[in-house]
Amino acid sequence: MKRIVISDESINSYGFWVVTDGIDTAAFQKNPVMLWNHNRDGHGTVNAQLPIGFWKDLRMENGVLTGEPVFDEKDEFALKIKQKYESGILNACSMGFMPLEWSDAPEMLKEGQTRATVTRCRLLEVSICDIPSNANATVVLYDENSKTINLSDLPNKAIGPKIDHINMKEIALKLGLAENADPKACVDAIQLKDDKIAALKTENATLKAKVQGFEKAEAEARKQEVTKLLDDAVKTGRIDATTRPQFEKLFELDHEGTKTVLASLPERTPLEAKPVGSGDSDLCKMSWDELDKADRLFELKTKYPQIYEEKFNEKFHKKRP
Image 1 (cartoon, rainbow, N blue to C red):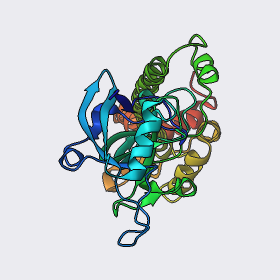
Image 2: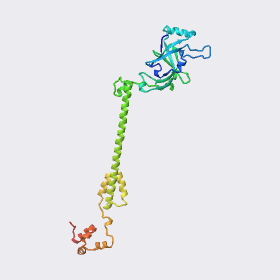
Image 3: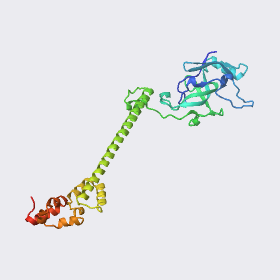
Image 4: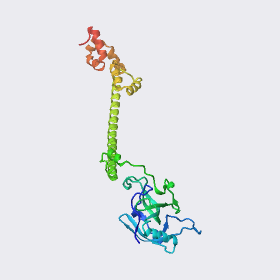
């Protein structure tokens, strides 16, 4: 008997491929049945489709699973299949399996693939078939209840997500690579771009924090400036305590404009400059000559410069130079 390819890693008619090393044959080899075209109809009746033989010497080599068919020569139908197999009329088989895991990662996809790659599966049966889905072998899928999954049922999650057609040439060119770059090179280029984006985001966050720090410092400096300007304005009589809150609000709306307005207000003698107490009242009531005679002109000038100025003008009929 010649050996036959049960499965290799080429894309089948379903649009996916099976990782050979991921095929679990442990349970199958305890009962390695061989069917005809996966047909198991009529169980328990005279029309039952019984196994036509079994498989022996399964081997996994270089991504290819092969085996040797052993036909039931006491079964008239099986003997017909054997004769056609030996004469070369039939030379293909089909693997029936249950998918367990799949992957649509770029490195697991091949050009032209339309569905996710089956990375792990359980082998249930292997059939001799008449029309394989590829030049080497074909496949049939079973669900968790060992029921066949029809081609129309392929959107079912049993074989993983459908892969949209990928134009690797266009992707490679957009990534700045040669048009014939392989998927891994594209994935590496995307990862590099992701790393650069992450670095830019980190840099942006750092710069944003610095700007916020500068803005906070500037706001604090303006606040201190406003306090100083208003304190000075109150001290020089340009505003009083009742109007100060209004100017604080004006500074919030227009800092520079309010500074200009505040600077244009005339200074007024604070109320505190007026004489307080009986002793000071006498000092202010004395004439220039009385002050001069009492040697208190310097005291008046020091305590009350404005009153001193008034008395000087009154005495000499002119402003003091």
